[in-house]
Length: 475
Ligand code: NDP
Image 1 (cartoon, rainbow, N blue to C red):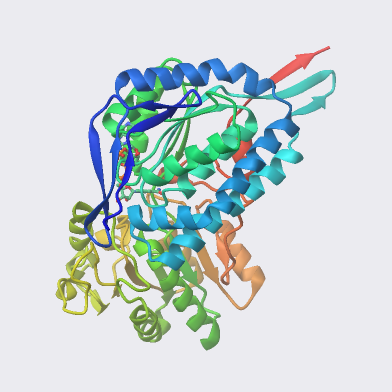
Image 2: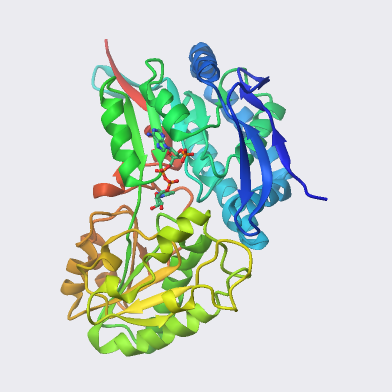
């Protein structure tokens, strides 16, 4: 049986309402078959969703924190109970292999929800400075606009902190991966979230997204996606002086200090390859530049080839999201993009269409380029596919200079046998987060970028704070 998830109704004002927009198919990028059919929101649907969120706002904002937390905890429990369903939905709409779908796409957002709820319990909504009471109050109606790479996670990191803060939400998920957002709406409904507090309006960015960004009753836009669209959203939102949170692209560096021993170098290369290839290379935090001491380049190439060989397309390496995106990534599989000295360590354009690749699905060969020039396109542009570039540095200072030679500043990694050296390098990287010697993702820590990687911070107490206005009351 060909299971197609049919979603013809939108979740607006606590009810499932027939969508007034066009129908749109959802493709499974691993099989190139249709896995969903949704009806998009019409302009009237968007109007209704914003109106519902606006009407619901004062009541939700005044709901005591403990009551808000209790409802959100119920939502969390519904998601946990339906974790297999969520994993299967993301697996079908985004193509992630099943185990990765569960761990990365469901367990991680659940951990983020837990961290957000823990932060909510102790959040200082009311403090004092001298004769002033400082009130932190929800910003109003938040439009959340999310991408396709982590369909549930990118929604959760926006929606839960906003609801925890007391804001109401209108969500526009990515056109390519809207299905898990419908399951999330069902979880909100099952948990008894008050009407209008969360609303779902799928559709294209140019229509539904734009309508939300320009809508006078939307107070804040929380966007994750490309730097190009993020910057245009910030410009458009400026006309109505909306608050804007932007989580954008990255070209993050994994910096190997000159002091590493063989064991740490091996760990650094293996973990950098794994991080770069996570989710088919489609994560904004991908460590896509590995910077090693120049006398370690050959060793790093051998280690990277060994690590990359384990990422078998269709088994451990998922597909790219679409045929169009695969074309974009394939364009980068030419070593010429890395400058005259660049060599292909594994993968590359010669492997496109190789018989070892799955016959169906938008797969590209896992690729490592080495001896890449720091100024080249391969070293500077976000590829959003399983493509690692190895660069060499003459010293730790030089490595920091190369790492910071980027328009982006989202993530990074440092490897050193000396924690003081690692911390010093981490402190000098112009980036929103840095992992030392394989430090793991912390679902309570602030997440966001420097430079063209974004504005604002998400997750945990920083995610809640991002959706709050600050009021000083003197007495
Ligand atoms: P986009 O930035 O195009 O889209 C992200 C979201 O914004 C989608 O929901 C999209 O809608 C919406 N959108 C698009 N245009 C507008 C607009 N004018 N006004 C309001 N909303 C809009 O990212 P893509 O999905 O096309 O990915 C392109 C590139 O972006 C990737 O190759 C990668 O480099 C980067 N990217 C970065 C991510 C990150 O986490 N930082 C995540 C995903 C992508 P629609 O559904 O119609 O596309």
